[in-house]
Amino acid sequence: MAKNRSFSSDNSSAVILYGRHPVTAAILNPHRQILTLFATKETAEELQNLCQQTKRPRELVKIIDKKELERLLSPEAVHQGFAAKVHPLPTYSLEEICDMAQSKTNCHVLILDQVTDPQNIGAIIRSCVAFDTLALIVQDKNSPTESGAMAKASAGMIEHLPVCRVTNLSRAIAQLKDAGFWTIGMDGYAKTTISELKKGGKNAIIMGSEGKGMRRLVEESCDITVRLPISKKVESLNVSTAAAIVLYEMNK
Image 1 (cartoon, rainbow, N blue to C red):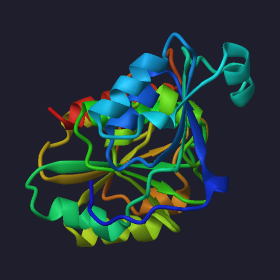
Image 2: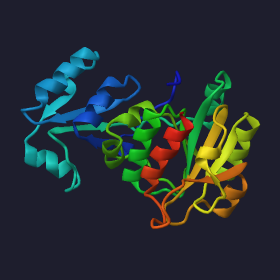
Image 3: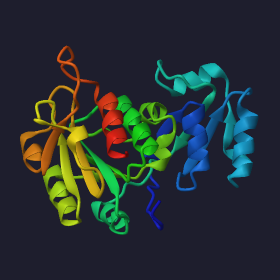
Image 4: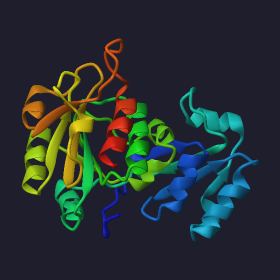
């Protein structure tokens, strides 16, 4: 993670994380600012020990009963007796992402265009970390902000992936090209399959939503478009499933 990053001091922007993996990962992340840890009496000791291990105050842990914990969260939240009120992680600028890539011979970033479901994005973040993606880039106005559902779907991996929010994706793609990235758009109708691509170098992979795909100007900004070779019986894959396959292929 980059050093000297700025954090919001506005508690109104706080996020409630829930579930063992997301809360544990947040405690272990020194760049995560934690306001309060909520625990049932069964899970309190585990969180207090984690605080001690990471030199966080044990007093951060507030013991509440299960019903009170459930009132803090959405009805469908699977909390396992763990929740945390935290400041959102700071985002990265595109310049910082390009600086991170400068010394690398081989690396890749993932760009999402119009992917709006927090759980899909969380699952994509988990795959990004699994396949050593340098960063995730999204358009600010068309992408949800960090949330408990997103962190839960990422199994806590949201703590490990730099996220960059940009105003204009086409301009961001142009900037990545100037930084030496080859830009690859995923399109189910492309002639070239991803397995035919020559791997290596610096790559920016662009994926659109499951239904709409990439917007026209974003697609026109790509150096090449490729597709996953799937059965004609299936029109498309869920975007998080497709992202996992694409990132695996690019990481070979």
